[in-house]
View (tube, rainbow, N blue to C red):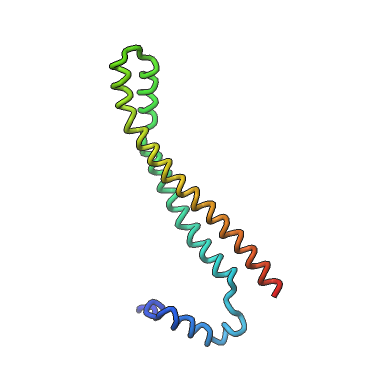
Length: 128
């Protein structure tokens, strides 16, 4: 059975909520809305962080380190250039991962700000 809320417009939902008997005595607070947003965003960010960790684990840094060790030990310029070319895909993959991880970190900081706003809303609501 389909949920009627899925077919309702925003205006219809607001109308039914305001008309509801329970809403008159226990209206929705802004802190509740902010907390819901924080929960949803937190879950999404947690999933993205797990995906990011998986992506990092896929990069074979041991092989890159082995190439780097050989590079540092070598005195032959051609061999060093060949080893450098072998290391380059690992560097590119690590750089791409780091850029994505920085975006997640930035979103995490925004999420922290949202959490602070929940506390601020609760303080304002307790004053009223």
